[in-house]
Length: 446
Ligand code: MV4
Image (cartoon, rainbow, N blue to C red; front, side):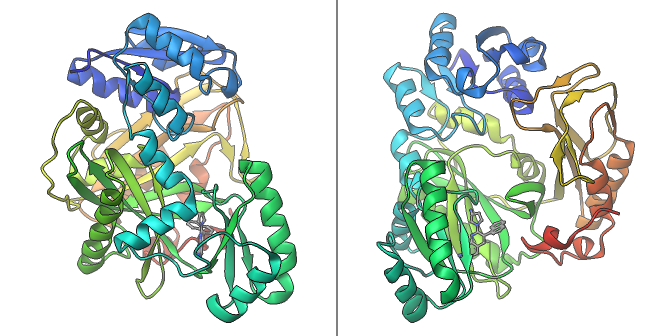
């Protein structure tokens, strides 16, 4: 049993983890940068330790500072949240070396999914569908041209093996475009990941992004908790997530769920995690990557399967066995990310002080947020103010509840994404479920 957990994160996810720890009777330690000294996670935790200056590298990414805080406070375990050190295999290893349980996967599991070519090879062996392509690394521009022409077929996409989340990707429509795309993908990969290895895939046009939530225990049992549709994204930043996906069928859920379980079992996955898939218009699905962490959008799954994923993650880390049964969505949930960004101005960040705040409530409304009147959103970290989640019997009712809740939400002092979400909830294509990852490219604010 853990007596005390250190939360190596900030913002709403730090609060989210503290809340579950309280319910479980586990003491909490917050860590914070000097920019976050007035944050709610510092006040809500049983203890708090300052770990450095505002830039993430000096605080939330500073492993020695975080380990010192864990040692001083005698924490048994560290919860990494999402972002920061959540998928850092060295951090997971250092925790293990110090006899502090990392609430997440082992370094081997993180590394198995961190390199995208290795991950794809593992998936092929496990019988999980992947997008056809080069298989391994591209060795030269000539090889790239030859493969695209003779084997894969245009259009193709070049991706960084150390990448993920869209960095270093190039879509190539014909041979004339290959040289520029190949060279710029390599340069961007080298600059972003210190690894210029790139590979090729067939480009899947207008795909949906549908991901399966999984949980695996320390004894090899894995289950899935259905899907989330995350197709409403802008420049690889998710803005809206929902469960179930309006594109899902019982058969597709079964097939994608089986594939996700195979994917997690192939690396003996322990903890909660997510298998991301691309789904084409014919409902063919392909493994994209695995997120070896709790995600921002975990709440929609919690609402539709009625299950505390953070509690389960902590219990798994303590050695709890899971039953192995899968979870079907019983409700419909939607999450809107409320960011301090200006949707009328290319979603430019809008940090600053919150001068007025009215938070929505009522039936089927959940708000996970760390802000309050007088809170200053610092410019150093992400711009999320909070997540607004609605849950109802049907998708239409969940959308109507979301529109109503968004209309109640008052945040002054900073620009927010609320006007964007209000417009989206009235959009006919969104309401009919007729959207894919390209949807926001042609969306304009009125
Ligand atoms: C693709 C693709 C089409 N075909 N791969 C974007 C992030 C990274 N995880 C993979 N991504 C994509 N990979 C093939 N073979 C289209 C995307 C993509 C995308 C995927 C999910 C959600 C939004 C996206 C936006 C643009 C491109």
